[in-house]
Image (cartoon, rainbow, N blue to C red; front, side):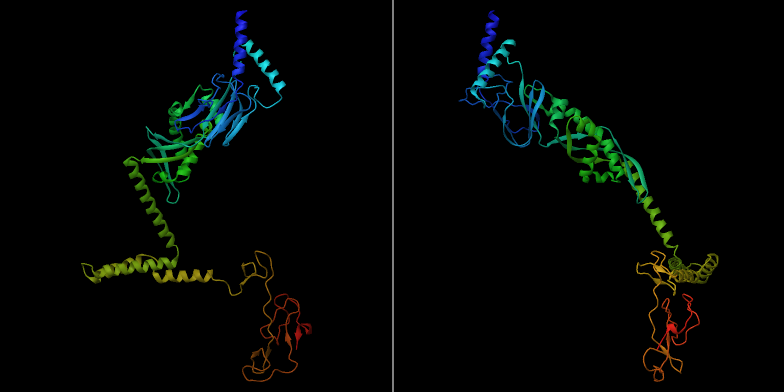
Length: 449
């Protein structure tokens, strides 16, 4: 009986002590603290010094600062989340006489709360907490590869594809982008705070493991080892892709920046890359030279230059200039084509590539030789109309007088032009019997004075 009375007294005293509204505020969090439990602000003048630690009174104020995310947890479950700076009122807390509402209703809720606490021996029977997460960018996380990391060096322009081994060190910056995941899977309920040093060893090991697939992604982009330090965005994206499951989906953490301070290749790998580049460049230039000489004119120019060098060398022959020139003549006879033949071949190719005299260009830009465009099917345009007449001296004229002898244009002279396709003969006054373009018969319908 005495225990029940004591529980009733404790329940009443606790309920009355928890009637005061609280105010929660979190100072700026250092990089070493990732989450901290919110504490009530109590000054020397405050009277709210006997309330329960894990009880939040209805109507209490909760402040959120920049770079923070606040969550409220009741009995282990998240019931409120806020990441916007400002001051907020918590209405889902423990009923209070000082909360908004009718006094009679609040008194009734207070007695119900006392009765509930008696069943728990005078304790509240529930747990309410405020947690603040550090959502600023957490920098200065050092890393270094204890073992070599494979890296494939690819340069499709010169046909380079070799595997090397590198060691690197530097630092990375991360950020908690999903505090709910971080709370659920990493930190959970904490009595005071969760520090970075608790998870730092795990993050460092996973980050170094992610460098291998990240470097593979950079290799596919044909980024060389000496370019990695300057490709911060590409490296950050590649690392985030490699850590998408272990960090992004599991911990709610994302890599913001990766800075490479030192990157070393073994000397033998450096020499191998250098030799491969030199050999590839040599083969590339040789291929360009051979493709250049596929043009007969270019080959003729190269042959003339070589013959000039040979003749200069023959003039300084130790056995006499004549002996040297004899060697040159023998080489020319055994060398196949001479420069003149090559130049002639070049001219033939140029003539073959030149447009035909019968060709015409369509309005779509296509060059054609037939009556219709091979690209759009448009008909070949009719030649410009020639209003000419033939003088007795044999000159075809356009005006009223012969441009050769000055004779006037004969009266009634007929000029013929095909009325079907518009073709005009070279001598408009003396047409053929049939139009060579459409086959129509030339008659008086085709003549004009």
